Image (cartoon, rainbow, N blue to C red; front, side, top):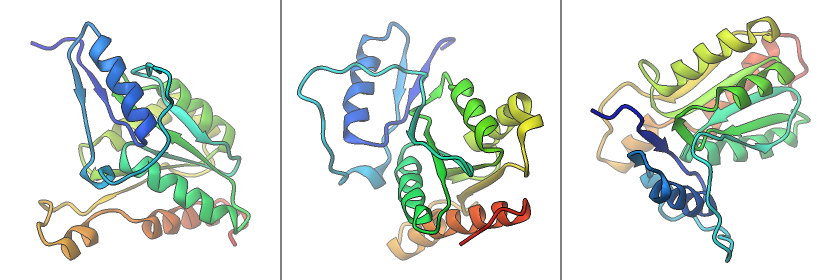
Length: 193
């Protein structure tokens, strides 16, 4: 029985290298989850040996209007969404979980306390997923700071289609995340581009 297993979910080549080193050095079993959608991702990897910290999320973009939380591919998409929304004057804070177990609830809660709104994006079904756990953590740790209900964006609840056009249609997109962010900010009376 695995009592202390860890789950790493990198979103960049640098994080993949650092978290893989951490997984190798960890005394407990570690599941290293790779998203097929990231296989062609290019990025800088430091020459020096950097060892990541399993269980520590990263705020990859500072913001003040809303917190956008993702992991693996959705963390990368979250940063793209934040870039687009910055052009509209919307300040999005992006939290890349990097690890699902242990989950860095503290970083997530502190970010939501700062922004007052949260959207969770994941490449998984809406029900029974990590997003539900994150939403519960926000409700328990930052309820009094929330200006709007926590929203989640996830894939269609169907088996993953094999045909590429159907797969693309089933996965959450930057557009679907942007729509939910606009809806959330509008609901609390914040200016939306």
